[in-house]
Length: 452
Image (cartoon, rainbow, N blue to C red):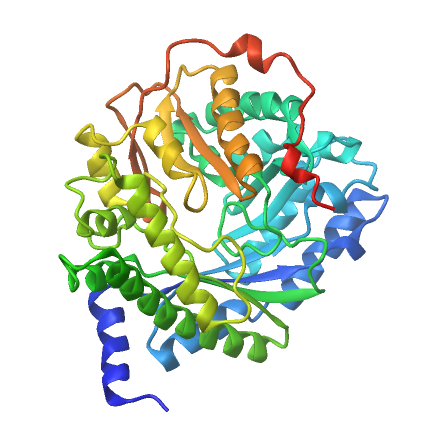
């Protein structure tokens, strides 16, 4: 039974420390919607999404009122469209993206993920059509998110796909230039992509998932920051234990909300993702947690070690609180969505290379990074290659969500608003990696992939 102290503690977390359920995401299998006629397939897709997710938003809003805990986003993830659409006779898959957008609008969710392809070992005909359709799809829809998995520890890195994604990202930025390249904020390139991730823009409903499922993403950087501030000067064991206990409380709340929502929607409960996902709001920053640990500014020497402690303690606390922890789980470091990260960049403490080093020990990767608009496709591909190599070698999920902001230069800002925030344009290396990227083929899997 909850004590009065625990109830008051939760109220404080919500009212003063920005605690929320960041998202409840319904995953929906669309494989049974495949049809040779693309319009027939789209009708099936629209009907199935609106039927299964029709009550997702009302249920989420009712639970938020009952429990007094904000549920910020209600979202949908679907089977990768490259799989669903491959049997159709469509020349491109824009019609499928438009259908997803209409269905998302009809049920009232803010994002729908799954305009996706898994190409870590090669590209099928359906994959190729989806990849070609990404620029038009992200420019022409409001709610659709896309993701592409280009590497795994078992398969290595598909460098043909990496090079192609560099060109696609440039195309998406160009088509959404009037919005500072906003389309790129809805596109993620992965290594070792998880199939149960509730967070956008990388969510999709994996082939090993049930017919439908309810996954939950919790957050709470403000709560963790406050807890860390209370043990100022304590040793690292005490610090880690404090973060772990705080993550436990956050995760228990997330599982309660997730299981309640799943029961009311009549779908299985999937996982709770215990990632610390920041927002642009003051006091809701992962960077500020690291600074509360004793760093003058995020990005200085010691930042990677502090982030490693944070990420590990969050996972340990979450694992104790729930038997079904999944998704990405850890600490996100998206620059545009974290006020402390933005400040660190502005003050010269945080650079792209340091962010890359930090991704070795946290979730997920180089996230919401704005770079100059004249950055070449090969440079973007090389940045992707570096990041997915970290994931491949370290057997972890890594990703890149990068925005080559059209017409912007180092020191300028891109403005997206809402949870996507604003980002300072960061410099990239001036030396070319074009000849490296153009080699093509696959970078082989590491020796420790031979684990069978």
